[in-house]
Amino acid sequence: MSDIVILNGLRVLDLFSCAGGAAMGYHRAGFAVDGCDIVERPRYPFAYHRGDALEYLDRLITTGEIARYALVHASPPCQAGCALTVGTNASQGWGGTHEDLVAPTRELLDRSGLPYVIEQPNGRAAIRKDVTLCGVMFGLGVFRHRNFELGRWSTPKPRHVKHEGYVRGYRHGVYREGPYLAAYGKGGGKATAPEMQHAMGITWTDVHEELTEAIPPAYAQWLGTAFLTVRQEVFA
Image 1 (cartoon, rainbow, N blue to C red):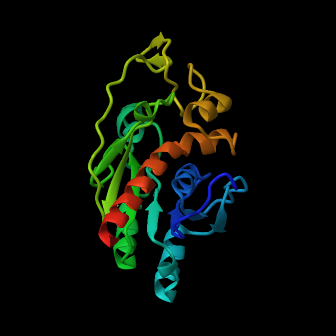
Image 2 (cartoon, rainbow, N blue to C red):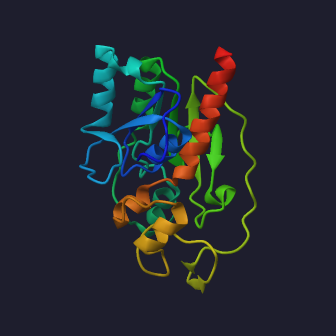
């Protein structure tokens, strides 16, 4: 990824990294990025460690290697508290039990002593919604609302832009056309992998499962730029 020059010498640790939607955003903001996920991610575009994210973070803290990072971004599995799980799936009796890793993730991040970001979708996940971002804010073809808890740093909340138009596909038995895509599931008018790539600005993976889990890079680019601004003000 030679199109971005890392000018600030700062590194981000990207935990529960999936295919690298957040990682690419931080990269575009000017960070070096190291990822960690329990699943092999051959399309992850930066340095990568395969393993349990919490065990890896604990090891970095214990050995002192965590000091090479300026910021940690964590996207722990969200199925236990996401809107789809606690809403439609629960009402229909679909799905199973899901482990909530937000609390143990936060505990380790607090132990690390570093500034951090915890990302979760809309739902009942127990995080502070210090920042909420959606695709409309960035002119993207998805809503994909995501909430971010900021640890050891803060930034003003951006204004949430009003949505104009529908998400394409079936909702409550009615099919509608619209300028936005449903970047999850299959069928019923939901987005194909190429459509998701275009709508979210992701080019390095075309794997459907990875795209449905990814956040648009624009979100992390916004967060990374905000963090650098705050850091510059602190050390000015």
